[in-house]
Length: 176
Ligand code: NI
Image 1: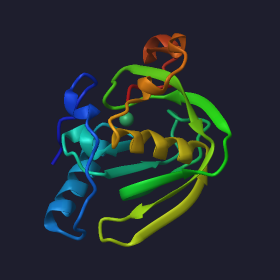
Image 2: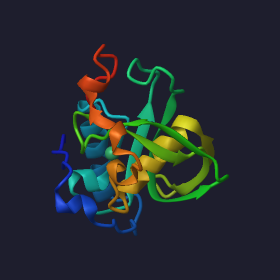
Image 3: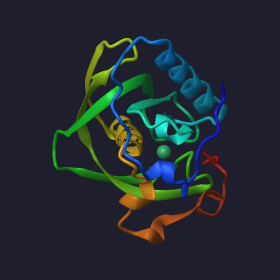
Image 4: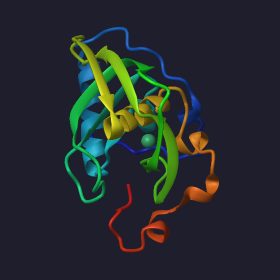
């Protein structure tokens, strides 16, 4: 079922999410289906359960090569439960981000360039990956939602925050 996506200002987006305690349940399967359908309907690159009002540590993400992310390598579609992120260096990268909970806006956000993420798929199988670049950025953005953090809260320079159609008037970057 396509769910409403909460927008910035809704207090549910500031709450820390709780770990999932039981895998392979009908409830978790239903949540995953709702996340997939909602992300697809919004043409998003990722979605976290708190964004649809479910305070659990569940995120999904994935990007095929897209004109909206012309410089981005594809990111495999991933369903990640109870994630733990570990930076693999102190190197920081800055790039533009958008968020389905902050529609119509984009901002430049510093993120770790390389990291390891660990967690589980919805069946309870372990996931452990070392990633870099855009993949690492997407994971950090989604996992921030599990701690009640939206990307504008990570921005040191609000002069690089604005409306997508003003920042990118040629229209290459669609709303997300
Ligand atoms: Ni987001």
